[in-house]
Length: 475
Ligand code: P53
Image (cartoon, rainbow, N blue to C red; front, side, top):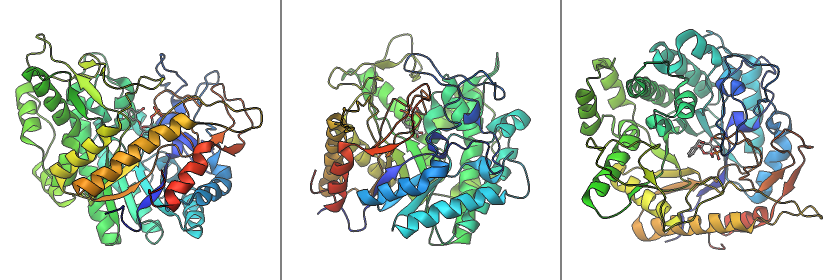
């Protein structure tokens, strides 16, 4: 059994990481427009407003806003069947709480999706990919506020109605579960627009924000179904399987607890209920969250059609006696896995982990799966003749596609498609660097922002073209 016919080969990006044009045609500032550049050892910072002396790599990004025709032609040349991008909320509702959408923003995505469809490329669209309007942070404290549910549903509804006949595949919140690392400022900010204040209980904040988002997602799913019953609406989970460091029972239990904490979001999206472990955790912590009967009914109704997920790496964890509650914390509970290598950014490379993830998600949720991100961030070298020999990237992707095929062919996983991340070089979410490159297409721009923005084909471009043409047989 090979990959199914109509398998959605493509590539994935997010609006803020490639569009640029951050203040054009009525677009409002988003949280990513006040996020500075960082690198592997310096975290990105968030300023309150746009400061003149700071470097904000997302402001220009790779200028896709003005160059998308050329870029989509290159995707078409590779044979893409689909293209995953996101809609910048701030192009549609610049401040987030207007009652009428911004027509110029809506028109941009009309043109973009038309251009894709002209090439036979299906748009796959994420509604919230790390970039809520900044005004929602200053006015409401981000997803601290229940008010955000209505505002998000309004945004989602406007998009569903406008692109009813252009987009079939949707996702609500990108990597909604990154914030399970609630001690990490970046994850809390990009998922929920929350900067924890001194003395606030970050864990409680995270569960409350996540609950509002899950309700907003469920209401969006319901709205989408009404608008077009043919829509396929999914969730999006960052999947990093957490392995026990050893077969010591406490290590195994901690790894299991880590998966519960990281993946309960998928339970709510897919089954419409919170798992007992999370309800028990809230009781144990004494969290009295704003969760109404009506919310629970909404969650039960608005379950997703498929599970979209990203897969880059696996993690490993080791229990220690100062952790009697088996709490998993990315900052303190992780250990290096001695059996796998890591990228220059410390991401552990583990192709078998992708098969494990596909099998695990299928066992848990029995839904179709969609690998909407996978890839290798690496430094590339441009040769004197302009060629780019990125054999390391081909090697990473080949190994992962092999495991993905085994999951389908030998384990019976129902897989909709595969869209490698950053199919064209773009701004890294985690570090803001340009030089952490994922693309099949090189973009001439460096970390300081210098470069012509010219596009060129890497070796991986021609390789991926063959992979798609052979439906994954010629690797
Ligand atoms: P960058 C952390 C862990 C796994 C995936 O990431 C992550 C993150 C956040 O940095 O994000 C996803 O650019 C995300 C994309 C992002 C991509 O992975 O930090 O959905 O927006 O660009 C790769 O190397």
